[in-house]
Image (cartoon, rainbow, N blue to C red; front, side, top):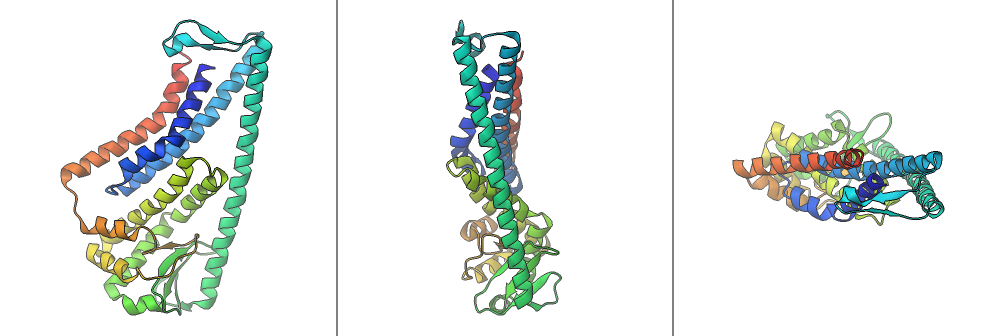
Length: 310
């Protein structure tokens, strides 16, 4: 019982307190890939702790029924004396009720996630197919040019192939180095399959809308993935070309949820990040802090589960 209680408490703390702490740790954007890993570690740890709590609770219920024992909470393992328990029938009925409710809730959430993922993928494929239909061919692989006065560049996943959409308005504003940097940004999204990750996070957030960790992860990770794509573009085309390209596209229209646009997400924060250099000391401090956050999120559920078995 102790393991189930501690894992449930840990999952609750991550879900309700985690977003506040993670925003402070990952808010600088110095290491966006590690920041993404920190958020994903917290999400996976919360889910793992919840599933682990159900598993330990189920094992305790089976052990109680099989050996005719009373379910009890050992206070000694919590630093206190004695044992807290209920009459065997009441404790077993309560535990079975909690276990059944948790299992049913898990199944419902998984079903909702699957439905949301199918909807998002269908919308993305339709968007990509429409862009190929109305867009004209270009000299860049996988890029179509759509006649529109608003400057915009974004990518959409689809079958059989994903597509990068550039409007004629964007071509009129971007010079050759800027366009190359913007396209490198979009190619980075597609190569790293950022769309798939965001679809999963958004499906999870929509399935559990009242749990702040998942909603925050979907929002913050989207911003961080833009910074990850920025870093790829900067390595091949330089900061200034990408920065000027972002500024040239800031007046573009709002993108569909299935699209990832070069200048559609956290543009001001990304521009500041590109324009401001970071000291070596701050670079290492941020890196160590993020690795510590990832390690703590991953190890804590295992530690809590094992500590109650020793």
